[in-house]
Length: 377
Image (tube, rainbow, N blue to C red; front, side, top):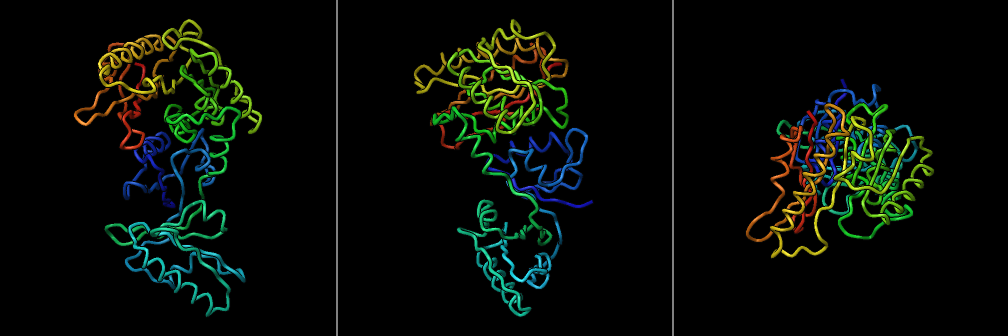
């Protein structure tokens, strides 16, 4: 079985949770890289590396393991680049390998090409020892990766890179792209959608009862499932409808997406009982400017809101239905405030906690998102 290296994005814990929805064969090599030895599958099919990275939101690069070694020999490394062309463009990224070593290897490999009368050029990392994925694509270079571990070095050949242009398009070029800080980006939306859906998406229905601009529903549609989104704010609903129409048209999707105005705490008044496979949502998290003199009242209000939601959602979720939700926490110099009562209460409402908290956000941010996964029992 061919081993592959998956290079994780900026939220590695959430990336691993996403990967775990598709495979249990995950071997952590360091906080940002995992090795997977089993075939990567979704909806009953084995996916290529390009198909895999197009599916995932939390993986920036995939490489096939081509060698394990105790020494970095340029003669061995050059064998993993294409030598059939008259001109070669290559690069090496080192993980746990210093920039000077990478630079020396680049020069030595270029010399080997020259001795074989092959023109070559190499791309050095802009900073450190890792070449950016954007540079690899735009400069049209082959990449070999070197990952240092306790037993030596793992050598990999890059086979797939995250389609960053598509992610940027959906983030910044949809009809209603909000410049408001803190909005859930499409990559994170895809990650939590994948966590909620798991490896099988056929004939599933996903609900986002705080749909906002429709980002989660859009990523669900791109995954091929039917999606339902609601929001209590009529302006958000109209913007979400335009964004969804754009995504469906832009990517020629056939998924059914329904967006409507509704209260998340009474969602069972709008949706059939036991009809939803998964709820994936980022609810209302906090006032725009948190007044910590009112933090206890803010927490109480949020707990009331979320418990009301979970009570209503239990009526529309199927047995073993999954909820992926972000809860806020508020950090002050002295303490961290959270909606702990909601987590503790969920079991009495017919849920069991599967995973969480997984924190997403800047470490210095006052309000942090903490993703939880619950299952209706």
